[in-house]
Image (cartoon, rainbow, N blue to C red; front, side, top):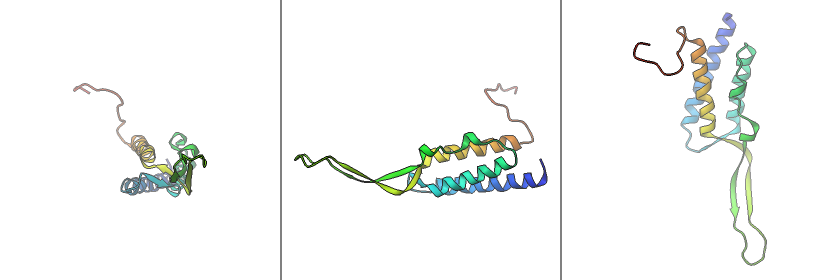
Length: 125
């Protein structure tokens, strides 16, 4: 790996670690879409240096508005209930954290000097 690519990888890892730390501290279960954009920008940077990370992307179907208000059904024949949604879009905090953890683990694995063993091991391993 070239020195520039290695620097880009270290910067991407730092950004992912920061995202992970800050998102995990959020009290709301809904994470604003801007964090998904930041995450995808880091993935683009990793792909630009030849690291395939497409499976870590957040699908558009997971980024959606959240329910802001629910009106009950009118029992007097005056119509059905109504659901209002936010203008902003969000992703589930735990879904995003799962993707972040998986990507951080992957980067740690591919940059480790000692290859990690996968699977069950005996005491002799």
